[in-house]
Amino acid sequence: MTNLSYGLTDKLVLVTGASRGIGRAVAVAAAVAGAELVITGRTIGALEEVDDEIKAAGGKATIVELDMKDTAAIPRLATAIEGRWGRLDGLVANAGMLPALTPVAHLQEKDWDESIAVNLSGQWHLIKAMDPLLRAAPAGRAILVSSGAAVGSRPFWGPYAAAKAGLEALGRSWAGESEQINLRINTLNPGGTATTMRALAYPGENQATLPQPEDITPAFLQLLSPDCEHHGALLAAREMLGLTAESRLARSRKR
Image 1 (cartoon, one colour):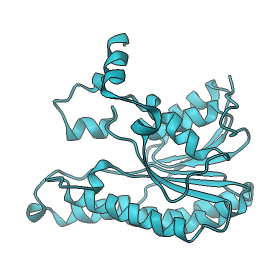
Image 2 (cartoon, one colour):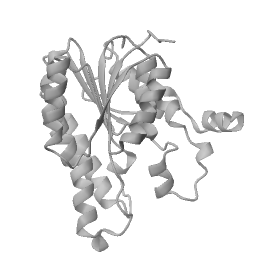
Image 3 (cartoon, helix red, strand yellow):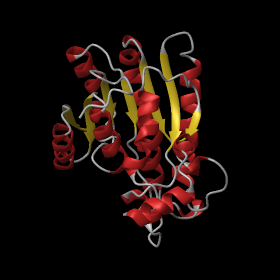
């Protein structure tokens, strides 16, 4: 059944890192809300499973195998979107990776380079390629996905924290350059969510006490909506949706 409350009917939304976790949940939720999806990830098989979910929800998607380190592929994707649709109504820049958690002085060069390549440089290439398509839409909406690691002291998280802090700064600049048009650019911190990445970082954590990816999708849909008035903001999904520790515990008991 299509949910019309977010105004996403027939809108074209690109979700990167859509093969699992938050990206997967957002893609399916956007399809339920009436959007047409372009979903990217590194594994075609996993994307096909998401495509099946989207079809089951009555939506449709185009799947694209994409590694964010393959920066030459990103403008090719933009060219394909322009040729077929002529615009992009929504962008969810969700793709990311967590390098080995280790002291800064002990980091391997490859871990630093990959984190910056995927979590920051790849995002800039994505912004550069998709900006004209978002501007071509009547009400373009972009969401950069950050993390609480971007602020404060986060021992052992150096390359990831640095990349996410850089992404937030990049988002502020991009938003500041887009104030005179109907393009809304925001950064969203999902908060601790039950994902594979989170499980790798906190192997002893009980994920049943955390919001599931599906629990936080309304925050993304709100920011994708043509009615969204936020611009240049750093928002927390939990605060937007009132996901308190008590509400998470209640949901975990129901499950």
